[in-house]
Length: 366
Image (cartoon, rainbow, N blue to C red; front, side, top):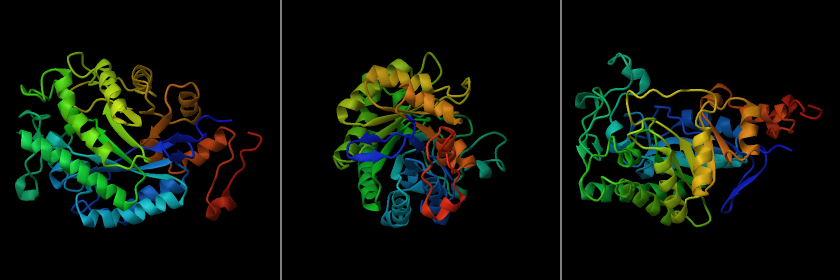
């Protein structure tokens, strides 16, 4: 018996295993519209046996894209483009999930391979002449010297952002997705409100943790209310900013307790992304303790992510109750069939699609 390859149920959705595809930006869209690249990229992970395949961050508005090449979910054209992808994922026995996002002050930047031609290090703002736009955020504080100077959001801007998430949520259902995840991590808009290093407001949306949580909670509440009761809603968080004067795991536990009360079903626990010069001590499974702290402190299911690469490592995380599922990113870029290979390594008979069974190696006796 393998815990990693046991079914997992959230509301009425049953995931065939606990291996989930983490959102991974592809920076390959025109006007936010996904294409054949995304069908093959995401579809191959479904063929590869993942229990859930989540899309890259889909911006809820054009202004909310990280780069001009980001995916989106703000028009009928986006719904039409996502539909065959969601359908293919589900046809392979996986669960089709979409991550909805707004980049806030980190919007309007070059994609990684375009940035290198302009900036020596990292992403940087796209000039208006090259298709850039004005970024927004909780305060007029840029992420770094090369990132856009954001416009501080007024109350109307906050209300519009909530409405944009709602519209994108409804479009996601129309496109055929079964799970929606709200992106509140990695220094993007909702995380920017949560962290005291980026939220310098003095109104009801800034100052205390209660106030800084207000806008992210409004978004999550609105998404949950506009998503069917029988389908799960997840939230990705950065549990820590990795600096004592910033967002802490203790703060995130408080946030997640409220998310649970709002009906959020699982917390996808990541970290960092909101402070440009912070040093994160990377090591295998380095974020798992944060996921466990959220799971125990907020009494809510969690997914662990971050340098999870080995089958036995993933198995132990789930089997020992450190997390309820694992999200794999780079490892699934390297090996789309990692779930099948992991099953075999753990002595579980892989469930290869009929078209590939002639190449299947039995796990019996391993």
